[in-house]
Image (cartoon, rainbow, N blue to C red; front, side, top):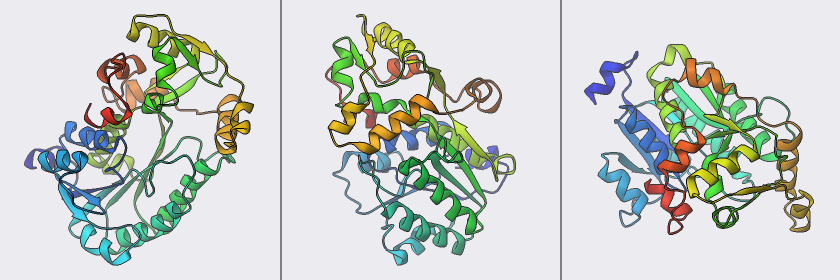
Length: 312
């Protein structure tokens, strides 16, 4: 803890992390710990140490606090003694967007304001400021506006596509067999980021408040075309992986219009993060390349699953 205080510009007390107990949220926490930000508190609906994610957090010295984003009163105690917040999400990672994300953001913003939070870092979405028309991205932008309108000192980290998405069961098995079906043109650049790097960058930003309060940063650690991604998969697996540009209309047949619209946005517009500047000037040494991510997560090990990423 003292080490953290020595390295920070401000007298940061405890940092509260919101939305890091599901999916790959543990990697966000790992990113904070790697940056020497160890004075952490995490909100969880239930403190159940039989849950591997919570047991790991507890073992790492992270304070667990029972609170519910749907219950305003429970947030008061959770926010007490907190000077900075990183909000990874206010709803679960799901196929359909959750309208509660916005309502919860309002409660969180009010609780943060009442607790006089000195710095609020939010995991938003790349393209949020560009009228994407994509409900998932637009909803993140709505949350941004709620946080700003509450008068909170904010930093918006607008994440591009999480590399962990390729670990999901509708993608990875096919890639391991040598086929990378992806509805994006072979030469269209795609901006990528890891969840752990979100934690590392958020921690860095919280340690340098004067530089980052008021900033909005589209964040990616690598930019590759699907063709280049197939080459990275090939190297990681030791077998040739070929990108196949599957037609986007398949998602309409599967009644997944939201996914269809998102893919169309990737195909025609897409992310705009300045990866070279982020890697070399803004956050040197904090952003993994796609190949590094594949190596670190042991991508080629077919025994591992998306759930395994919680512990990588």
